[in-house]
Picture 1 (spheres, rainbow, N blue to C red):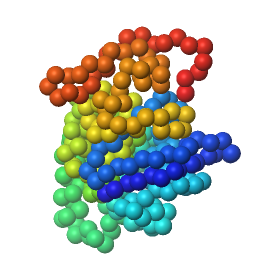
Picture 2 (tube, one colour; picture 1 turned 60 degrees about the horizontal axis):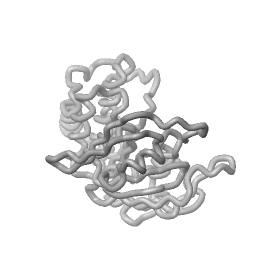
Picture 3 (cartoon, one colour; picture 1 turned 60 degrees about the vertical axis):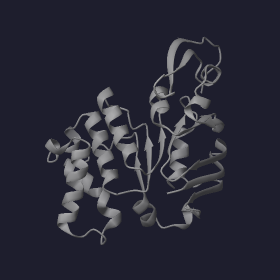
Picture 4 (cartoon, rainbow, N blue to C red; picture 1 turned 45 degrees about the vertical axis):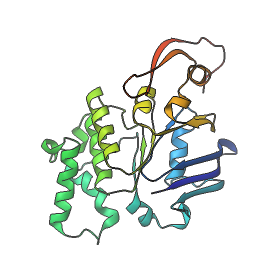
Length: 261
């Protein structure tokens, strides 16, 4: 699925949050959105999956304005995994994952088909042994994997993720991102870990103070001057010999009297 954002502006109480955002996610492309805290990453994602309607500009899915599509149609093609964990859910792991089938009700009404899709998602995120456990009793990392499984059963063409590696130990961070990249679908993902972004993303957009300030391949974006300017860190950026992926060594934070947003 092709996602395109054109000249998007969004504000809250007359305060500009996003300014003139232009972004493209091509079919099958893994696009990363990076930037310092408070830069507008999550706000941009909320506009991308139509939770927030922009003041101006357009969000297009396969060249159709997302706000001209029904919520059900969007849910049949776009799955979202957020940072926020639902509280007091009261459902089992299996029941939470089954919620991902809701947009397709009527299309996948065969109980065996539904069971197979849920079992497959449980296996992919390594939660088969927890399928009858209450979601509320899971660890943070297990909850994150369960919510990803719920997205997977939707069989989305576009997957939008807000910090999917939060709460996960290093093994599951790489395992789940390996899984996501193996799906061959379009992905838009915010990431704090810049080395993970370098490893998995085909293209990066760096946002700061609500504006896209640079974009390109990880090698083009993750440079020492850029990291110093927007993340206030002195770094050494090396190229890994086997794959030419940049690797960042963090040195010291840059002391400043100004607030970094």
